[in-house]
Image (cartoon, rainbow, N blue to C red; front, side, top):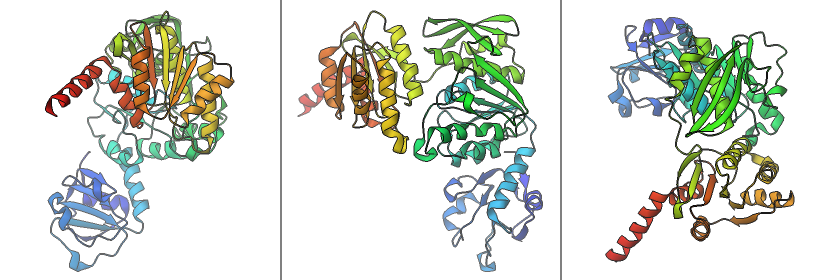
Length: 474
């Protein structure tokens, strides 16, 4: 954070100094008590603080509050700024702090690919720029202030992931970051427990236009059907389209599976650039296109960006190919699950599983609320459109996927379980070196995560050794 004096902050907030010093400097910020973990923090408190002893180790501390503070509470090391409304004061502070910096800021949203796209942009820019960005998976509302305050005079660009759990989430996140470039990777059907319907979810993702204040640069997937449903009528900024179609500005041609990644030719402004992106799947090409478009706006040309992209390291558990039990091949895709990412994973299974027995293990799709039955049926339709030899589902709701796939005409073997142990025992008997297994779920499903770990070859050996050791000890 760029240090600010209390005198400066008090002027911005139109606050009164109840006690403490105008010369105290602020280096950190918090709006929840548990976020106070460093000295020189400004804390926006709507609740009455009756005892400072438990946070004394973090003095000097600056508190902004609308509450009346008794003079008897005056404590060395504590500065109190009284305001009319703590919430309004907080947002005044946020907007002021962001206004101190004129720099390119990228905000990324989408049902699938937003974390990967954000990390690609961060990786490319970090070669020669000082970057601030959201963490790999931490994009919650409570983290926004800390990410904003990580911008200082040395920061040259920001890259932030803006997830949607509820309507308004994109707008609220961008109130902090004030992006100049927005990306919508794609729009599937997710978080329907809060967004209530697919149409409302599309609308929530479309908040990115308002977040850009209907100006700036918006990057979208030109072939994503739901993205086309966004109302662009009032957007006066620049729209950059990425995709395979000739109508796109960044066009991917000659897409091929390569060694642990994808090769394609980027056509941009009538020039061709050879691109390699680590990670399997055509969806990874779209992620790379969005990243290349974003960094081009910040001044990194496609030739240089392509060189940097080669060294990008994809995440574990995102279509990670590893050795499995009985010399099988495992595609571990247990990072997250939506119908969009399921489709992408099954396409990868189709491509790299050619000539092998293909097994798909699928878990429950979460955060879909009352639309759960519909979403799982849609997943069943997706499964039926792919050449899978064995379908295994884990979980009561995941069984809907299997049932609907059969209803749609799926002819291969189907197994439905609630118990991961039974799945493991089945796999031990079923798979061999000519088998490739896709395991698809999310990081919050213990059954899926534990099974994915257990069927890895090295992990399987550890389990056997553990059992032998136990037999010896007992």
